[in-house]
Image 1 (cartoon, rainbow, N blue to C red):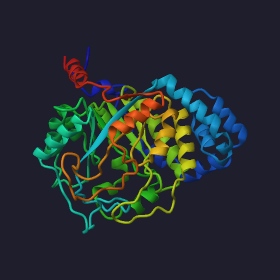
Image 2: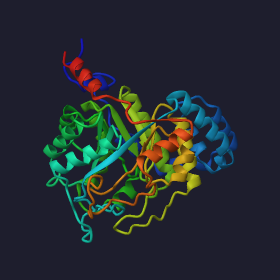
Image 3: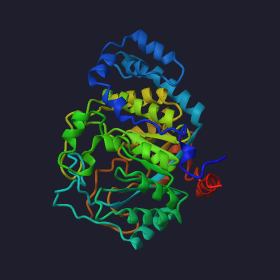
Image 4: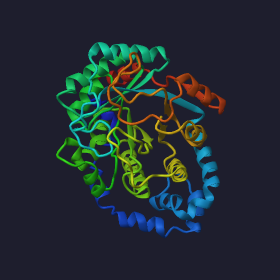
Length: 398
């Protein structure tokens, strides 16, 4: 008999899944660095020949200095794995920023509290409808709603209303909001939200504390790291993970992200997992990373994770250049944003509201789609229908 709870179909058993927090807390940076430091060429060759999913020591070998001479072999394996598991389809989506108000003091973010020289704005209902109509006219059917964190500007009722408005125009509506409690995710799923993205930013607790000063809600490391669990139990179809590359040591972040992904795959096996790889870019507050991730390092970590997590979707946003997006796409990219704005609105009307960060790939959506086709892949504007969401919810209530 099916459970009366729509969220029950996304859990692996009747027993509540344990938290990932103890697992990452017990994995010290020193262990990650040891695995990478001690990796040999033989370890790299073994990892290249291993069947997916790989183990942590294999991932460590593939992101180690010993793997640098083997990037071409790694690229060939990653391409083969990607085509085998995902075919040649690349889905296009677009972010819609609802608000740039925020009460957090994240040192790297253009929305952080205390910045006086940007104009703050929260879209009204009418503005959301106009933006949604414009984006649909541009061809998009997959939408990601994004906002800063300010409960006065973005109460749950506003979030739910925004999802309902956008569901009328889009086949898939996902969110990249703050870390929410379980009942909030349940309300958003009920409104038609089918995906949730929440980057941990950094899995290094010391770096996390440094990067998120003050007492804003985002300063709670454990609450944020457990948010995907709450979203999965609420019935989200897709979970998006990532680390903000450039805050902590990138090799530690990769291993921790891999562990988090494996954890979620074990406990919420019916939920689709996607990984994003945002690199720090310039923002309004003037933050400059002291740990920049080079293009070569970025390619290496991307390929290693593609081999290690073949069933996960890989997302590449407009933070990356047209050159990088073109050359990485055949190596395992499944989803790309296009024509993005990081200000509230800006698609249907001009706006001078403050942006979160600079866009690097400014090509219009149709040009991005043409690039995908030129590479022998199929640009897809829709790979999900909200009718499936309604049907699944109906079955769960029978």
